[in-house]
Structures are given as C-alpha cells and as structure tokens.
Image (cartoon, rainbow, N blue to C red; front, side):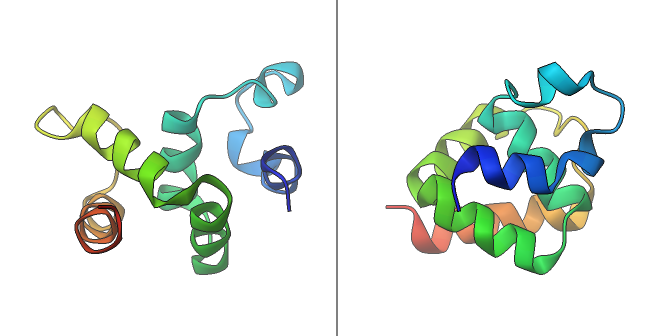
Amino acid sequence: MSREEFIEKNAHLFWYMPKDAIKKIDDDVLVEFIFNYGTWEDVKELCKIIGFQKLKEVYQNIEGKKTGNYFPEPYNYLKLLVEKYAH
C-alpha cells in the first residue's frame, strides 16, 4: 500500500481537515494521528510504509518537547519502537 492509499484509507481520522489538505499532511501529523487514533494494524502498516528511520525522525522532532497532542501510551510506544528498531 502506498502512503497516499494509506492516508485515504484513514481519512476519517483527519475529520477536521479539508479533504484537499489531507493528501498533503506531513509525516509528523500522520504518525501522531495513527498512533493516537488508529488501530494496531494501522500502526504496523504505517511502520512498513514510512520505515523506522522516518519514525525515528518524527520522534526526534518531539523528543524533549511537550509531546503535543500525543496520548501518553502511544507516545511511550513510539519511543519504544524507535529505541528498539531505528538504528
């Protein structure tokens, strides 16, 4: 599945955004919404699509800062994934 197909499949998670803006979301927003609101299958598919290096970059963008809109559990899981798989 391509990134675009994945976003389209999960467009309901971005309900507040205009439809034309959904296709243009960056990886930071995509990861945040999938980790917070997606299913476990969505998280696994996202990891396949963007890879662990990109996941690490997203995590590094928020590490040490206020975690924004991440719920504590998804944020912790993101941290654990990055520590384990992104080298």
